[in-house]
Image 1 (cartoon, rainbow, N blue to C red):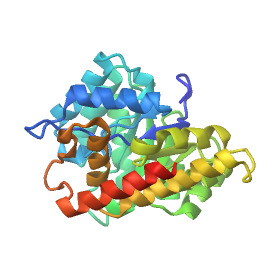
Image 2 (image 1 turned 180 degrees about the vertical axis):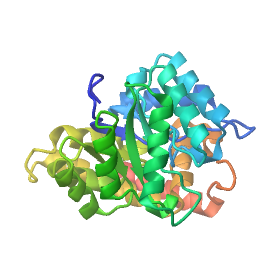
Image 3 (image 1 turned 180 degrees about the horizontal axis):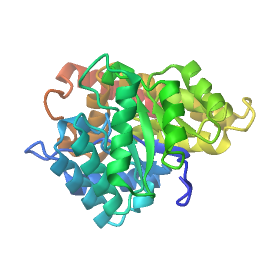
Length: 306
């Protein structure tokens, strides 16, 4: 992401959150992971999202982790923390806190507990957050993940929010896997950054005018994603581009055989040689020993084929 850009573009990692032996966010290890991701080519860190187990953490845990990252010297302009939760006032508090430490772009889930609410209700929630914060610096990336939130972000809602707050709602993360929906948003909303949540779709989305990605598999193949982002305009016959895209697809398949977050954490544990990386906060669980054995064998084969 260009530091002064109003619209996020690039490869953003949906970063994993390491936990200590008390199942609390491990600040030092998380900072090290952020540095690793940036060194691997990520443009920024979309911390405290689904992959980061954010909805298992309290407001205090989330704000403390963000403060630790900024205090460690990672530029706030490279952070896209998740701040959307079920409670309006907690969303306001998290978003206001992000602004207070220099972060201006946040990723915001809609309120997701009550089902079958109207578009008016979702608009009112987002509008109330923006009005209560009252800060012109705020930029919001909407988060469309209906499989998890059961609350889709409709095109009509995007249009309404952009009309009411044109400088605030600058993009969307689409984790639905619905490529037609992504391209329709690109076409309907010029200047609105559409970020894919599925790694293999970033290349075709970029070629349709998309903004990049916020993805989980970037925790293991950030370098390949960064290459594709920089070279998406090259010919499909370019061997380096083909190899990078193939590696992204294989990595996504690798971490999807078993529960994705547990698989990614197991791979982080293997890379860093720190077994604590395998911890997840309940109700999520680490891989079973037989699953871990298969994953690591497949990961070794993946690495050998690179």
